[in-house]
Image (cartoon, rainbow, N blue to C red; front, top):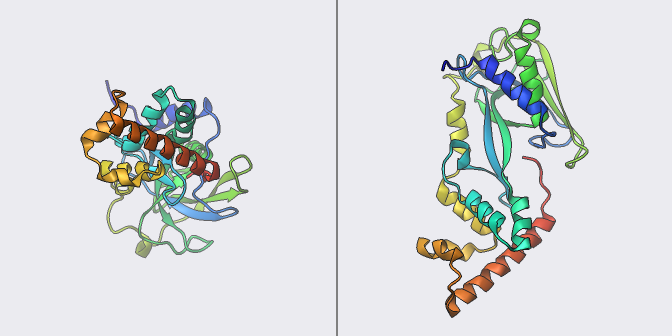
Length: 266
């Protein structure tokens, strides 16, 4: 079967978005506006990358998961473990730990309001789902707007966040007039969004550290892998019973963390 064109793939995503609820992603501060030029990922390559994120709060905040590339993730493994548990507290914690889909683009950040000066170093930018949907609408309306990613004839986007909190925050996308990016502000090499995203995806070992910290069990980082694999074994010796009590305690700590966690939608 022939591969669908970029526009056909974006139309499919556009339809899927309309069947889902509003997204909740925060990458901008309240009442902040950014002017950016989205960068192309190459002919017929998608310039918006969907990633999987877990929000752990505290000092860790959001963690982009190796699941993005169908690779093992210790946070997801813990999530699945909690979700399958018969303990109501575990199930409640699993709901709070559930993976979320986020959207990343590579951009040039504009340093002024008129589109004359840009940082030539490509940056990853996380979009709210509503912004993602509006950008797809604009890109598909090429007859009216042209190709926004074209460095010579494309156009910038003004992305704004208004309000704070999960339920009273609004995001807007406003296209600017077509303008050419100055030669000295352009990336020296082609933009590889996959490589940029890969740079922010932690290793499996790092996700282990994150989930252990989240569960309030940093000392378990020195445990042997076999001991971790034995977590579901109910054939407990006195040593195992102590371990069970310790895990119950870490869940209580995690629940306390959850009460104070304010998800910033990133």
